[in-house]
Image (cartoon, rainbow, N blue to C red; front, top):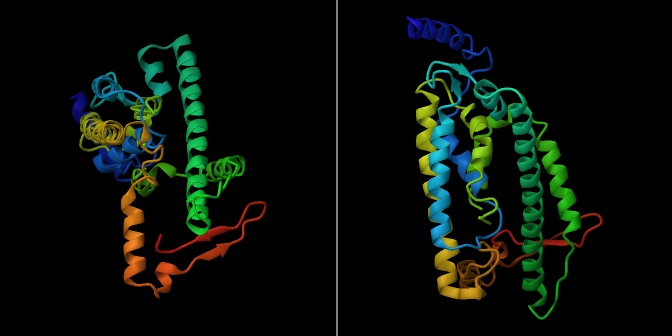
Amino acid sequence: MEHTHHEVIEKEYIGKNLDDDGRGERTGTMITAVAHIITVVIGSGVLSTGPAALMVFSVITYFTSTLLADCYRSPDPITGKRNSTYMDVVRANLGGMKVKLCGLAQYGIIIGGTIGFTITASISMVAVIRSNCFHKNGHQVQCHISNYPFIITFACIEIVLSQIPNFHKLSWLSILAAALGNIAFAYSFSAVLIEIQDTLKSSPPQNKVMKKASLIGVSTTTLFYMLCGCFGYAAFGNDAPRNFLTGQPIFGFVEDLCAQRWPENGFIKNEYVIKIPFLEPYYINFFR
C-alpha cells in the first residue's frame, strides 16, 4: 500500500516537471553519472604508487560507494525520502553533532580538492605555453613562465562557472573534461557521490543506477591509472613524463609528418600571436 501511495505521489509530481520531493525533475542517466565520477577521479597529476595500492583503493571505493548509494533514500533505499546532499544522508541516519562534523570534513575535502585542481590546471596551461615556446625558439631556451597568473585566471573562471544555475545538468562538461590524471585525488568521488546521485531521474531506482555507474567509473579509472602509472613507468622508468598528455610522442610525430607532407599548408604551418594583458604573447597553431 505504501509503495502504491508513493508511486501515485511521484507520478503526480513528475507530471508537473517536479520530482517527489518537490524539486525540479532530475534528468541524469547512468552515462552522465559515469562521466561525473570519471571527471572527479581523473584530472590531477600522475600516480606515485604501485598496482597493488591502485587495486586496493578501487575495490574499497567501489564497496563503500555501493553502501552509500543505498543511503540516498531513507529509510527505504528505493521508496524512501530523498537525501539530496551528503550532509542530509548523515542527518537522516546519524543526526546530532555528526552532521556538523560531516559538513566540516566534506567541505574541507572539497576546498582542498579545489586548490589541488587549480594548481594542476595552472601547471597544464603553463605546459602548453612552454611547449609553444620550445617549438618556436628551440629546447635550448629556458622558457621560464610563472604559474601565478594562471592560478588567478583559473580561479576566476571557477568563480564565474560556480554561479551558473542548474550546473549539474551540463553533463557535457564532465564528458569533455574526462579526457584528462595522484593517489591523493584518486577514487575521491565518494565525497560527492550523493550529489551525483541526486541528478539521476526517478526511474529506474537511483541506487541501482548509481551502483552500475560506480562500477563502470571505478573500473575505467583503475584501467586508466594502470595504463599510465604502471605501464608508463615500466617502459620509461624515472624518465616517464610528468604530464602524460604533452609527453606522448604521437603528437610530435604527426606534426612532423604533416609538416613534411604539406610544407606550404597554412593550417599546419602558420602560427598566430594572441596578446594577453600582463602576460607574454601566446602563440597558437590551429593544427597543433
